[in-house]
Amino acid sequence: MSKIQPVILAGGTGSRLWPLSRELYPKQLLNLTEECSLLQTTLKRVMEMPDVLAPVVVVGETHRFIALNQIKELDLPVQVDLILEPIGRNTAPAICAASIHCRQKHGDVVLLVLPADHMIRRKEAFEEAVFQAVQLAEQGRLVTFGITPQTPETGYGYIEKGQGNDVTSFVEKPDLDTAKKYLAAGNFFWNSGMFAFSTDVFEAELVKHDPDIVTTMQESIDLGQDDPPFFRLHMNSMVACPDDSIDYALMEKSDKIAVVPADIGWSDIGSWSALWEVSEKDDKDNVISGDVLVEDVKGCLIRSENRLVAAVGVEDFLITETADAVLVAPLSRSQDVKKIVSQLKKAGREEHILHRTVYRPWGSFTILEEQPEFKIKRITVNPGVKLSLQMHHHRSEHWVVVKGTAQVTCGEKEYLVLENQSTYIPCGDKHRLENPGIIPLELIEVQNGSYLGEDDIIRFDDDFGRQS
Image (cartoon, rainbow, N blue to C red; front, side, top):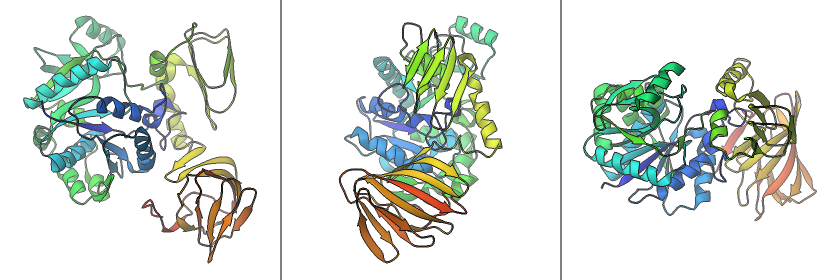
């Protein structure tokens, strides 16, 4: 059997899991059901299989350092390549870029394409399905994994299976009556978004059915920037690339499609109700996480991130609390959470983009208070790391060290600030913050000025390749 090249798609925002999932911290990077994030769980799953090459992860540019840190936490025996998308262009361009990258590195290999945000509970059944899919891929087929349906689900597309492993049709999300007929028929499967095919066959078929994707993504590779473990796709090439899913661009058009039925304990955790389905429950069917007290509560998902949440006399409800938002809804309406996200976007708010805690390659910051002309942050800087040499046009900053030691550059001066000491950074002065110690540096930052946006940063030097 051919060597398997895992390709993990880690883009997307998971808007139906708001307020926990945000654009800058999407669901694939969250710990929803285990101690590891969904991305980490997916990487561990493929690395436990035999005959696999080092995985390739396709991720958005803005998530690169969070993804890299999570990969480093796993301490894998191989280096994972991260292909960075400067903008999202759906699954067909992402898979095409990964295919070209892997073919140029290894020659023709069988890609195993997996979304990073899926749960698979039956490991042995998954590996058996992969084995069957790879065999079909070696025969020149484009293979999709069809999940054996357990319920008449209306939230998934379906695959109609014909003779052998042939696909008769792809079907859009059905209404409930149609979904019941599909379940009774026995030859309809949920479309999982997982695939296996050789790079040569995949690219040849994509050239036949959507050549513009191949042309632009080949250009994005040719003009891209290699910065191991990152490979940055070329921005202008990606802008020119069609925005299309792999199903519409190829799988629904090619005559080489095959399906492998897979009863693997699968869930895409695409909504709060789906998370409730796959999570461990108490004796009253509640899924409880965090500091939560309940009285006469049944069939609920209640999650607290920051403070005590108490519920009395509710049934089949979703209650989720984060530092800046609380969501309350019937679990049966959890698919409609994305409508709230749409309202936030239209209103120009930021609660769908980021949490109060924002992660950076050097550590993180948490917004404690924000008013028109001042902002207070708690900043954590990892040991041995320094922020960019930078300047602000519209704000000054006061730093108070509460834990660790800070090495500060301000103008022409460089000095240490110890615990319980403070320093002042005037508006317009070049400055830099560094943690020279072996424990995390924690400080309180007070910003004052007429404009306090994160885009008021002029960078002169940065260890992480970021630009102003």
